[in-house]
Length: 388
Image (cartoon, rainbow, N blue to C red; front, side, top):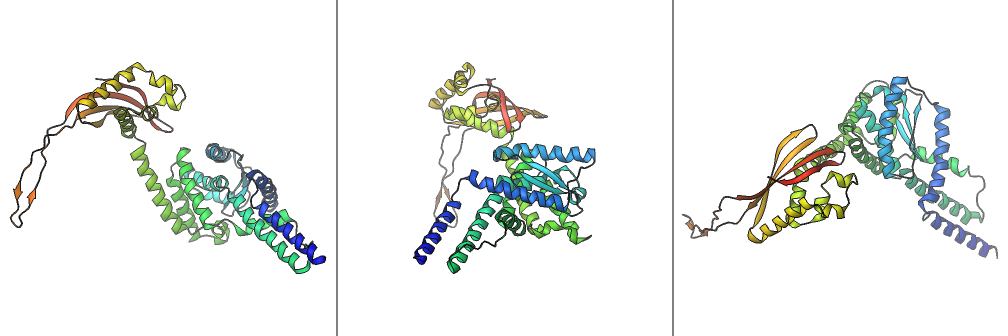
């Protein structure tokens, strides 16, 4: 009978174990709140919270607030809060439930707001990526697994184990984040700093500051190296990522890029593609149906549709004027019909016929002009197209 009860209890705990690993985010979030609260109290007792000098306080929280506003769009269930630890140690940490701790020692060593933004964006990335929750899930599984092992030994749960929340909190602090989680947080920091108006080069500058500190001064203060990846590796992949973003921005977020999308939309009569290029669409000032009914646009669409029946159409795009976030772009639709002339050439070394193509000059059929403005989400059309 005892064996039956024992097996039934083990089976029940196993079911609980499986359920814990499939709980909804909100259920795990309750546990994360308790863990985060526990660790926040621990940091408060160990270091205490610091009120910075007014000018520095204002600067730090201005940067934090601008980042947090955008990060909360990616994690709507979190309300990010920043605490300054009164210590000369150099570190920053995300504790869960939106709590960030930034050490005074790190603030003192940062050279500019871009580097400050990089630190904060990295820790915000841990929140957005649910890294604490993932770690809790992992440790929960290990801990409950231990209970099952103890039970299998003597038929009863070991009641002498420390408080679950306290033990879990300590394990999270000791475990830290995985290298994969750190890298994903680094990646997010590049995108978040860029989106929030800071130079993502600050992520690289931050690594160089930490690297410099690691080769001189008091290494005991560099607590950040105990739970973060090697700075050399981080500089390499961050540099690569920043360069890709900057190249992509030049390619995709330029007046030419937006004009090209509109041009293709007109050529294929794709109304959604056209609509996506307009500022009024982003600002919700014009609906798709209203956009379709624009008489000037209807006139141009009909003309291009007629042209397509007569010619093989191509296009060229040229910036005519660009000053401080505004641009005028000329779009020319061209007749690319060609006359093919075969020219036979007999090579000296082999009996082979080579065909060459000779093309007529392209001729402009219609020219359009559009005015654009640079907004938060790139260049958008504010006027046009008009025929000229």
